[in-house]
Image 1: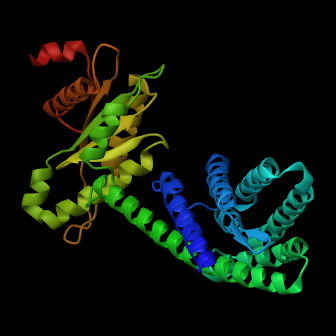
Image 2: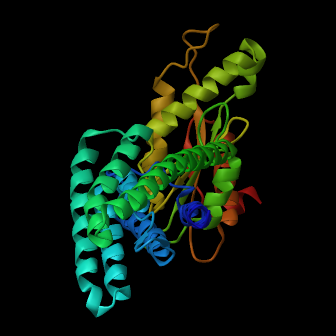
Image 3: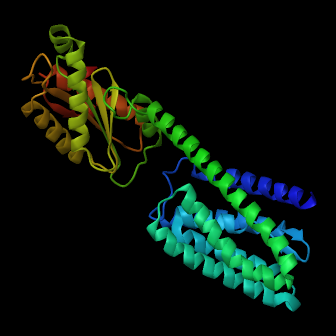
Length: 366
């Protein structure tokens, strides 16, 4: 019963540390051996910390002490590949040598050999298998198999060896099963959170950034050497489209315009629907002159393309655009207000044009 209680304590330690140390990954995409090195190194360190904690809480069974350290190694390999598992293994080996008395150094060397061979073997396995429960348990099984000779050398007795090995095999396989289920549930929970966050930041109609995300980005946008520019866009006579062809046709137009604007955006640009028929493009590290070129490209692309709907297959629209450039003397909110004034000038001047905000324009509207 004492052995069972100690393993239950180790289970609780394993599952609690997994939950806590994997929380930083809740906003990350699924981790694989192709994930960036920084993330995989962090994963290896987290798994290594779990393994070291398990080693310090190892369980005495007769003359041998055993633990669940192969579980974190399998976790690191399954998700992060060899890079993560190598970090975990180095932490285990370092801790093993640190806590081993000099007169028992042979045991530490044997442990280091077992962990090293285990990692090399499962790194080969990982190259050819997908991340499934049975493959995870296969890795645990390989770790158990490599640990058995070391257990025998520690026990020096077949009867003791069978007693220790039976408990070691049983509890590691059970821990592997529960660990995989826990990781699966954590990953499902994290992905659900990410999906909900994406929904909260996405316009349901166009699939672009919604006003909330745009406002958040405006509050965070930096002022690099070239500053940033804002382009505010409005569909000309959109009310006429809705009144004449119906709101379904208007929605079709909004979706297609969103797709068109997104296709013209650069990788770092953010395109979003700001409300109604208004769209906003945030252009980081972009001068007013560059923003004007991008605006004109968008305006001409829209003007020469058709925006077919179920009722009007040859519908054409135009857009008006207002451009504002950042400066150290005003906030992003003020830049947005300036873009709005430039947009108003474009519409007042005949529509289907883009205008850069200037002080002269503000004086003209006063």
